[in-house]
Amino acid sequence: MKMEKILSIFKAKLNEVRPITSDMSIVGLRYKNYIIKDFKMQRAETLLKLKNNPNFTLGGLAKHWLKVEGGLVVKNALTLEETLALREHFYQGRLEVFKLLSYRPKDSKLVSLDFNHMYLNIMRGPLPLKRGKSFKARGFVSGALAFYYIKYEMPPTVEPILPCKLDGVTYFVSGLGEGVYWHEEVEYFLGAGGRVLWAECICEFSHEAAILKPFMDVLIKLPDRQIRKGLANQFFGHLGLRS
Image (cartoon, rainbow, N blue to C red; front, top):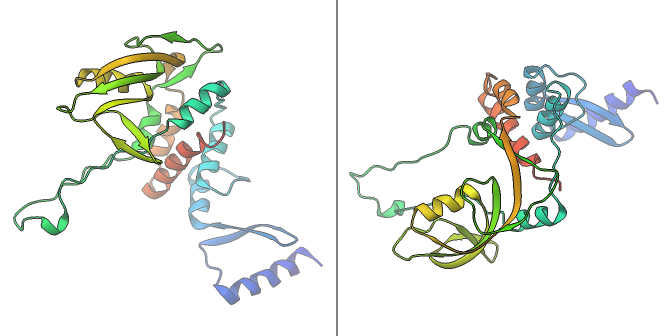
């Protein structure tokens, strides 16, 4: 059966469920594997001036552009031990609610703070680059580009700084705790009145460089806010998908 006939049959079947609009296009057809690319992906490909893109997510599209157009392949040089330690101590973000809406006085105002294009702007800045060899040392060294496993104490009179996990949920608590944190987190913790009881460097980096800034500068100029945000956010997530 010719490809054109197969395509017409598939379109007829698909129209029984939902009509095909200009927001969707069939980009792959082999046996019974039908791949439909929506308008957002088509729009992103046009804005990035990519042709014959094999990816079907915004994150994959961003990585494809970085490799093909940017000439940059980012490889993870972490050891297995370092990778497991960092993944085990990954914490979700911090969300605080100070007053329930139902008890809000009529004359008060609610303020919501948000970071505009947070992931995109983070990736525009300097990122740590890994050494070829792992260096381990006891004790915390201020300013060293490293992740530290620390045991600490946070006074109850000071607002908690470092996150911890309890039953898979992220909390910020006072008292004794332990975990893996980036050096800037530890320095901020110490500046707020916390005490490091024991520390070991588990992963050290040689230097920082804004290696993704050229790509982020391309994304931030895209006229479609939803697409440039989706490309950056999904690309950020893709960087942590594999070991």
